[in-house]
Image (cartoon, rainbow, N blue to C red):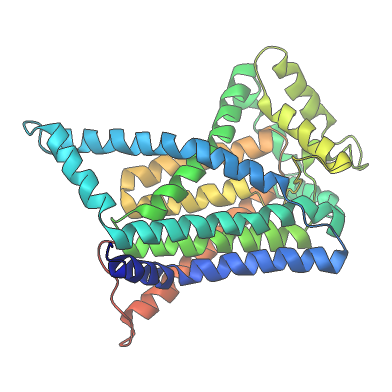
Length: 357
């Protein structure tokens, strides 16, 4: 009979290391249930199931990417060494590290569980709090940008079919990159402090921004401005995107149409919410986390953040202020979590964290 003590100890350690992530995931799920009861809304979550199904498809892809990265790293570090034995040795060391594997599994499950609550809350925002902030946000956007709607300022650079398709491709690639960042953060053994900071900041950014702020400042976004009865202010933007789509793909239009059908008919794809932009918020978080790994990676992600901010406005998803607020919120959360973790690390009673985690 195999000795289960090492595994039990690893699991206890994993629960301790990820306790704040677990607590925040439970809080989000509890908030979703409370919202369901308070507003008499049925608790169904087909969007979450779609996300889980996609994750099962993406995980092998991520593992292949990490495998190629490991092989390349070994080849560059010791070009004359035999790569296969070194690779097998590295894989055995990683997979045999029970605390690291258990902590990664617990963290990944916790993030997945968190999104079970988040996706439900996002899907029922219009039912709980009808859209009421679009005019205010649009006017604020125009005031900030010198009396001009932000999307008009992007015209000289992005008002071509090819540029729009490129921006849209980056906007969709965000989803796969975000999953990859989370996957790596859960299982990394490189920087325990950065890992913990990211995995605590992650649910705080999504919970405070994508759930709480989205409920308080319920808004639909420019692409739905006319559809929710607010006038034709953004009709020229949407007509321009439709014209571009006749020449080069603009996939955002298909997603926007599917979400609008879900809003009216409660299909599997639901979740219209503009403020704040979680594309921008999560890209900001990925950028901050990338800087803890390599400076060049941080600057690369800063460029990606800029592209996502532009895409959020140019594709009609968001007002620019949605992105500005998202950046401010994320940077504030990252800073506060960092300070709290530093304070705990300096405390005399603070337990040391194993380097392998």
